[in-house]
Structures are given as structure tokens and as C-alpha cells.
Length: 145
Image 1 (cartoon, rainbow, N blue to C red):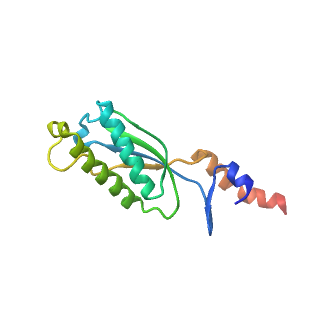
Image 2 (cartoon, one colour):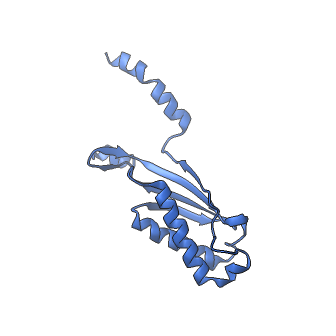
Image 3 (cartoon, rainbow, N blue to C red):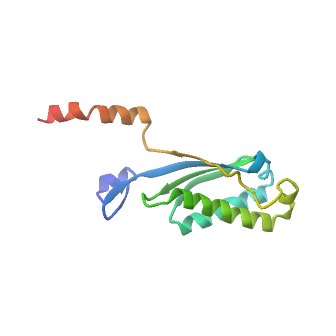
């Protein structure tokens, strides 16, 4: 990897240079306000950080609303996103329900998280900027000739 690529915040492996950042939002089942307790919210963030390390996902930012959590992460192209989501949701759900029995008052059964999640790529540039860059490549090649 070159110094310029490092400056741009790029990562690399043996055959690719990449920058893969994601914004993930996971909601508590039934949008129940499980994170009104600072203790529960902090423990959940710790559990997600812990399980993310296991899958070599770097957490760049993480915070809870009262009924959801936002995760900003950086990863490699080899990440199996559904597997990652199942790991962080399953692990955090089991531990939180075990350590905080008071959650049973607002959540019943074995569920803590909603079955769905939101994920979006979070690049270094806006989509409009990237689109203009891609569209300008033909012009750029003509100038260089």
C-alpha cells in the first residue's frame, strides 16, 4: 500500500485496495425503550464491540437511542454481513437478557432485537461526487491521449 492510499484511509489485502465503511441501525423488538438505562446501553455497546473484534470488524462509532443502536464500522470485503449481523444480535441479546432480568418486563420470549436491520455503505465521498467522477473518466482519458 502506498503512503497516498494510507492518507486516504484505504485498507488493503493481497489483491485489493478498499475502503468499506457501513452505517448500521438495529432496532429493539417492538421498538421498546430498552436503552433508557445507561447501564444497559453501555453493556450493549461493549458486547457489540467484543463480538465485532471476533469478526475483524472495526467499530468507528457506536451509540444508542432509547429503542435502537447505531453502529459505524469499517471492514474487509470478505465480511459475511448476514453472519456478522446474526453474531452481534444473537450474542448481545443472550447476554443482555441474562444480565438484566428487568428486560423481561418490556420484552417477552427470547427476542431482544427486531429481525430486520438497516445497513448503508458510508463512503469517503458523496454518491453525487462519485457519479461525476465515474462519468468524467471518458473525458479524462481523451485529455491524456
